[in-house]
Image (cartoon, rainbow, N blue to C red; front, side):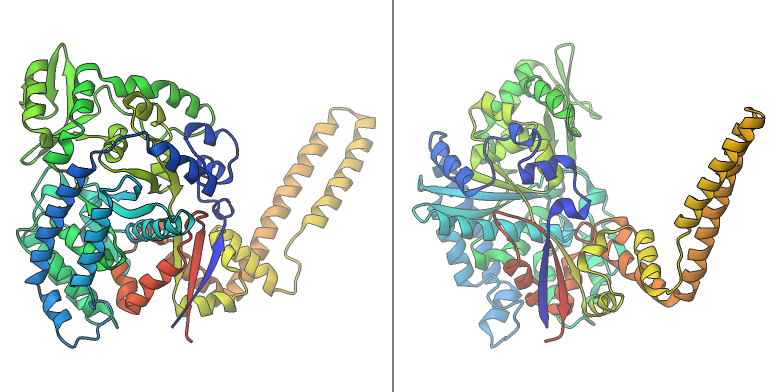
Length: 562
């Protein structure tokens, strides 16, 4: 199987916001909301400036070492490890969780102790079974960008990091995924932060129900085995996601960090206390939001207090009313001194929301770059003053790569229709019209006739107003009615020609619908299992090989036979 890549500028797709397009092209006012440009020169400046921002590397490394020591014990006793110890030539399972992958990760963790080591971070919620495709694309971009920066700045080290957004509570989104066009939902009664929820019978049942799909795919059994090893009953979703991501990407040295950790949150405790006592963050971002809104769409609103309270099955906003701190939708409440005491005793019970999450991330990590989608970068652009207020380094914002895959059948059919790859972004009706016009020998446009009609009625209008000026409007109305009738006739002609080309029109509709499921980008809907099941690890390698680093693009990858 051969994977052929075509890169398309983001603006040419028509799918990305003006803010994202301007930022990528260094146009408009977008650059005024960031600290550096996402260029080699920008990275050089960021590296120089990052040295003046301290990071508690010792605590970070100790937490990560403990995390991976536990994970390695789990892999040592797992079926995957047993498979690796056998004469198994399975490309997907081979080396997953083996000693070499743990060595690569542990070496990167130890590098974090050095002042010349920086992290290249991407973040995402722990969607079950990885959720949409861009979960994979973000991680791959971090791996490739870290490698590229090492080439550009060999005197420094760059560690790719997946920051697990395990404190999100949107179960409907995180607890679902789509496979072969069908959406599957985890029907659990658990509540609170998704990462703290546990794999239960309902999730195991969901996995078992999908075996029928995976087992008929060329490499489906391999993907299924990895998922079964990761999602065992009793594990938290954070633990399952750590297992799964390491199994896939540990061999590239990817470090996973679980920020829902009391030790790590203790490093951020002074910021959370400041937020509780003063509500500073919303005040700080106000001017930036106003300036941003004057040119672009504002992404996040924030609240007077940008913290959540986490406990057992609870993840709820903290609000301050008349001097009392209330945990929304619960009977929990505190005085100011009580909530500060609670924070110091149990920092893991407090969680930053979108306004403070980024600054928490860059407090615990020696970050140099953050990789995110267009929406993520938009809300990060509101936050520079929050970083400045707290004297935390504001990283380079790097737009993640986007991909669209076309299988062999889609590729062959699209080529036979005479379209370019860029044409996939055109609206469906425009594609149909273009195809019909290219195929027919007849003239389907009445433009010349309408122009002639306009001239005729203009002449008539000049003649009638010589007799009675009031007849001029009547002549104009007749002209308008005639034009409308000709436009309607033109549409009927096109519909008639479409009926003649029905087979091809249907094919256009099917391909367009499959590439944009639910009228959305493929990467926002489909799950990796569909592609790994069909092409095995070669599919992931295709993403790796075609993941641009400093100059991301929208990449269409067509699959053809060798």
